[in-house]
Image 1 (cartoon, helix red, strand yellow):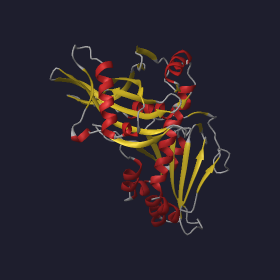
Image 2: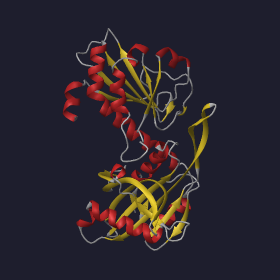
Image 3: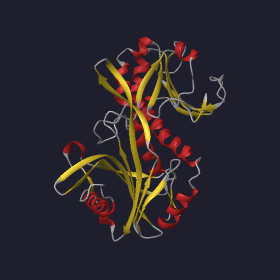
Image 4: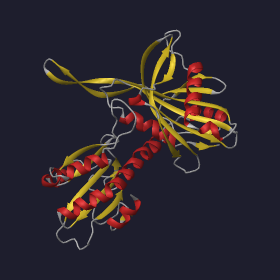
Length: 355
C-alpha cells in the first residue's frame, strides 16, 4: 500500500493554518462535531456517484472485534455552498475538488491543520476531472484515514492533559512508574499491590430506539474505566497471545468481582468476538508492546452476566522488570455508539510514558 500510494499520488503536504487558500472568519475556537465523524465537502454529483462506496470502504473502517460493530468514522456530507453558510469548525473535514485548471498528471492530497478551529484537520483531494479524482481516492484514502485516526486520539490526549488529575496521576506514577493522561474527575476505586482500577465519570450518549410513534431518541448511560496491573517479567514467552490472555483472566478473576457473589470479570471467547492482538506503540514512540481488543463478561458459578468491550496495552517496564497492562473497559447499551468511549481508552493507552 505504501508503494502504491507513493506511485499514485503527487504529494501530501503538511501545511499550517496560515495557508492562503483558507482564511478563518469565525475566530480561532475549539473544534466541534463528534469524535467519530468526517465531514465530506463535495458537490452532490460527486457524493452520489460510485465514489461514495470508495469513501465508505476506506474511511469507515471497523475497530475489531466488537459487537455491535464499531466504526472508526461516520461520514456526513455538505455541498460547498452549504459548508460556506454554516459552521466550519468540524474536527475532520475532507474536501473533494474537481478543478479543470489543475495541471498535474495525477491528483493531489494536501493536509492543513488548525484552519477554522484549534485541533482541526482539513484535507483537500484535488483532481482535474472525475476519473482522476476517483483514482486518487482509491490510491490515497487509506493514508487519509490514518491521518484522521491518529488525530482523533491525539486530540483527546491533549484534552485530558488540560484537566487537573494531579493526585490520581501521582499515585499511579509512584506505584507503577508510568505517566498517563486521564479524563476529568477520574478516581481510583481499587488499590491492590499489583492491581489498580480507575473509574471514569459516567457519560451519556444519544441512542436510537423504535417506539409506537416512530423513531425516538433517549440517552444511554456509559460506564468506563481503566485497570492497571503488573507482574514479574520472566521471559519473552509471556508476550505470546495465549499467555497474555491467560494472565489477563487470572488478574481479573481475583481483582474484579461482580456485585453478585461468585461472579467475576472474564474474557469472551466466542468466535464472532474472539480477542485480536496487534503490535502497538505509545505516542512518544518509547513504549512498545501489544494491543488486545475484545469483549468481556461477568462469569462464574456456571452463569454469565452482562459485559462490554475492552481495549488494553501490554508492555514490559524496562526500569522495573515488570509486565504491565493498561486495560480500558466500556460498558454501554448496544444501541449506543461506543466510538467516543473507545477512542478515549485508545488515547489513554497511547499516552503512556515511563517514569
